[in-house]
Structures are given as C-alpha cells and as structure tokens.
Length: 325
Image 1 (cartoon, rainbow, N blue to C red):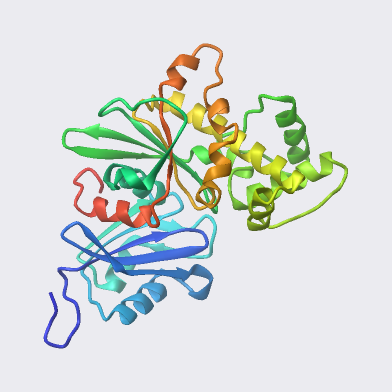
Image 2 (cartoon, rainbow, N blue to C red; image 1 turned 120 degrees about the horizontal axis):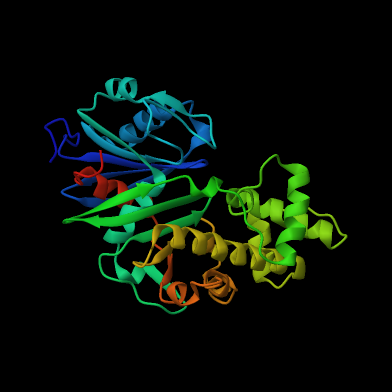
C-alpha cells in the first residue's frame, strides 16, 4: 500500500542480512520478498546499523514498523556486537530509534537455515548421492567472512532453526597434509578452529601455509586464489582442493552431531564462486569418511545453495514463524 504522500506504508516490512563485509536490505509483504528492493551496502561505509537503515529506507522512500534482521554473530543477549565488523547496538534502543513495533534479531545462519526450507529446488545444486529423509533435521554450513553452522528441524507445521557457533570448534586433522598445515597454523594462532581455514581469510591463511610447505612463501587474496585455481595454477589448485576437503570433514562432523538426515546445505559467499571445481573436489569423499558411520553419511545428500539472497529469504520466513522469537 502507498500513502497519499507517496511513501510505502507499514504493511511493508524490512528484512536484512548483515554480514561482516556487507549489509543486504530488502522490503517484504505477505511473506514475499520484493526482489527489486534488494540493496547491498558495505558495512564500512556506515558508522552503525541505524545509519545504514535510514540510508536504505530513504532511497526506497519507505516507512516500516516491522523488521527482521539476521546478523553474523551471536544474538542471544540484549546487545549485539558484530564479530567481523565494527557495528554494535542495544536491541531495545535500536528498536526505539527506528520506531519499530516489532524487531526480530536472528543469527545469520538462522536465516540461512530457514531459507533452505523456503527456496525453490532449482536454486540447489546436488553434490554426490544420498536422499533426504522427509521431516528430518537439516544442516546448513557455509564459509564466507566467517564459517556459519546451523541446524533446522521440523516442529509441527513450522521449521525450528537451531543456531550455533560450530565454526569455532577445534579443527580436527585426519591426513598427514592436515597435520602439516595445522603445525604451521599453531605457530601463528593461539587456537585453530574450523573457521581459521574455512572462510575468506582462512583460505588466505591456508594458501600461505601451503606455500611455506612448498618452499615458496606467497600471500594472495581469497578471490585471487579461487580465480587462479580455476585457471589451473598448481599451488592455488592444491590449496582450494584442500579447502574443499576440509569443508567436507567439518560438514561430516556437524552432520553426525546433529543427525542431519534431512540433508546438508552448503551456503555462504565462497563456494558458489566455483561450483564445478567444488563438485569435482574431494568434498564428498571427505564427507563420507568415518570409522563406523560411512553408510550413514553416504545416505545424507549434500547441496550447494546457489540462491542470490538466501539470508533475506530466511529473514522473510522468520517474520511470520512463531518459533522464531
């Protein structure tokens, strides 16, 4: 609906997906995302969340009274402090500042999880074999600015997201190559987590470690590594192949922990850059490695999420989901 002064009225709600690097905003109504309203703003361009929101709504000529926003950090407390950027705020104060009647604050992988149940099948790319068990728990894991991990389980007619911080669990080496890389990383870091290697900066850290083992120390940005790997540069190929293998192990660990017989979904901003390379990598083989649970893991399907804005889809779903507070 539009008011006499031309501004969108409160039947329109605001959704957002706030990462360490970018903030994605959109408008929604009646459970549908307004795709023409999607806008990506660099977080570094704004002092805080409210400045970015005011800027976005002014450009959209919109007024809203309801919002759901997903953040790449823990969200259970009264205050939010972003893990990978400078934004911080108090929930109640932000709601008052923005004049909102409702303000749902969720974890970014809560949104990613809810999106899996809402997005069309054509936005998923299946890797390997396996078939999902209807209604069973799903696992969402994704390397981006950080490494997000979340579960999704069916409760009655609704999906209940199970957010966590699995990216910060300790990296578990399996092969000799893993152990060699871990030894280097332990000299640089106090604690080596999965996120230490499975994110944008983690890929850069992994490449540097591989270059040291090869006796040709180098540093590259993560987008350079992925591009050169796909062009056939050997050290970048080796690094990216190891990255995919490690992600298979992290996903396998999380799938066993959550009992994710509903499937595993690879989200985040990195893997969709090289889906063909990923599909041909040892991700799936690493995912199925276990001492006793190989058959269990082989039956679990794995997919890449190729939707452009899954976080916004999930935030939109969260607005009307009574299980998401």
